[in-house]
Image (cartoon, rainbow, N blue to C red; front, side):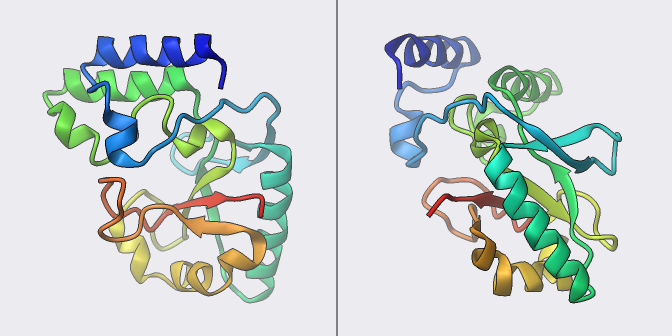
Length: 177
């Protein structure tokens, strides 16, 4: 990771009030922003393109097609998110009166989010098309738990994870293994 990149992220963290040891304490490494992205669908809530890095997108398309053949409808809700967008989300929540500690249980700090890589995907179902723990009760989630790793996708934030991030059954990340 280039020193200038780390310096920029540390400066952003200071501006947001994020502790300097956040990444180390949360076991969240700095993530590089994806340079190349492809669209894999449209977000249900706002119709904006959901974009992933090319290899993650290819894996998503294979998984999506296999799930459809199994009668399971996976919905891409969110993919790539820039560091600037991650910071804006935190600023919006702070402006709405949320505490930084509370926000960082729900949102990774800018620079530490898997969404920056273009490999993370928030997934929903027709019965639960939003980022909600109720997704864990859907057949889509059960299918992902059983088959996601076959396509390189893993649940990043299970219950009681080491990162201090709340349980996110919708957040899956493609890992090139």
